Amino acid sequence: MRLRYHEPVLITEVLEHLITDTGAVYVDATVGGGGHAEGICRRLRTPGRVICFDADEEAIAHARKHLEQFGGQVEFVHANFTQLKSELCSKRVGTVGGILFDLGVSSHQLDEPARGFSFRSDEPLDMRMDRQGRKTARDVVNNTDEPMLADLLWRYGEERGSRRIAKSIIAARPVETTGQLKKIIESAVARKHSIKSIARVFQALRIEVNDELRNLDTALLSAVDLLQKGGRLAVLSYHSLEDRIVKEFFRRECATRVRSAHKYVPDKEIAPRARLLTKKPITASEEEVERNSRARSAKLRVVERI
Image (tube, rainbow, N blue to C red; front, side, top):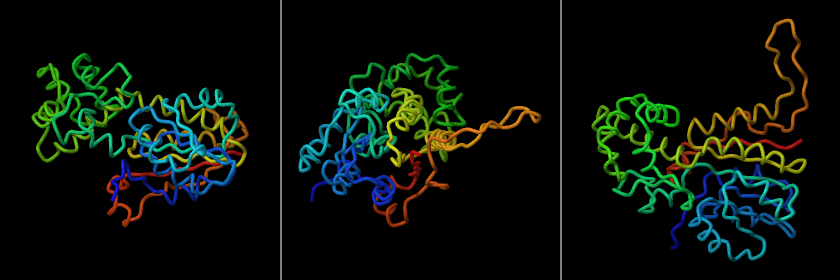
């Protein structure tokens, strides 16, 4: 049996909420292994097609092979999702029927030696999703001063021991591998909290290296611009920082008024650009979590362009 590059999360729910026009163009902004894109392709009819983006060349290569059965129904773009608008414009695609963002790191990236995303083995500190990027986790760990490093671990990892960990990292420099970094974190925090602290530190470094949160803000704005009337934007997030950005962005896009800052000034009525389809985020069933542990933290939010 062929092993999956990456198991698609909430695949049934994504397809049910995303696809409304089976003859339209759809965008998978983070194609990964191509699991969601495959599901979209199977629901489309001519001239419907899928344009797949990913910043990771390895993901594009795998998805291209995985989806070769669909021929010209699928196109691939090696680019960060911040470039959605410019890349689609270059293809003369004005509006699309739907866009999917599956955020975070893939199972393949976590499992692949030399990528440096995981602390389960001793690997070079890299964490670049786009291998052409210049900044690595090694650069961040070894070239950031102590106050900025502590702030980074708190802001992007919500790590309470950020100051102690930053101080320990500075004292142990140079830090070259994930194994070294793991030991440093373990020495700085209580043993019962060490695994969670390690995970939070690695998350913070990955977000910093790939500029994930700023890129997400930019990409969401472009995505709504690109939707045709009735088109849908679906976002799968896996941690609170991402989900907070998505939730707040959707709230602004669906708002019908801007609240006044003064009690004697009335609120300003505005025309919303989107309609919220998920008042509460959709989460995975117990059966899916048992089958795919990555689904445990997944939250799906969806809006429709009006």
